[in-house]
Length: 206
Image (cartoon, rainbow, N blue to C red; front, side, top):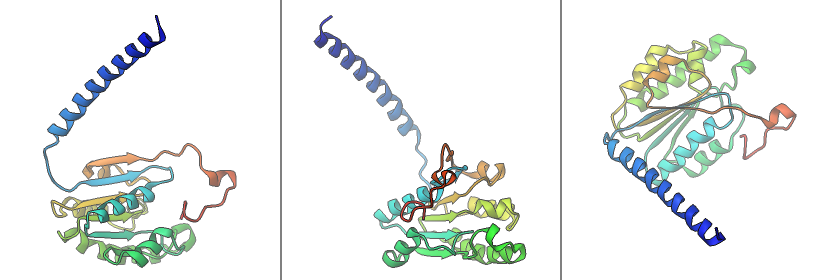
């Protein structure tokens, strides 16, 4: 068989495979006919959960949508996303719990008080239909550490305005939270530079 004939057969096989794939994709798109906001959980032990959420912030801002961002746990160490939002995106309502990581504070009662204060910021957002997207970064830890009532969090997410989307990030969170989310993605760690003695990199890790 000549090389040209071999390439022609490969081309025909590829075209047939892509036509089949297109038919499957088109059918899935046609079947998805419900128009409403979505609830997304980005969990797992790998790097990139918060980064993924902020990617959706950028996407929403591209459509001039109203965005609310609330970060639990983080707040003592300045991050690039915080700098950018505060300096360039005044239309984004941004709030941090500000206590830092729980292993730094070592103060359960103080952390619970801060969590409740932060949750009081979240509730109006999840009740306000003018917010197109609400990011609840590291909220899963509030459930895992029993800082906030799991049932209250789940109810607030379920009862948010129909057109509003919410993104929750953080490790774990439990099956009850997963069950109310439309999309659950797990970021799995294969290798992390930090475990090999490489320092966190500004602009990449924070």
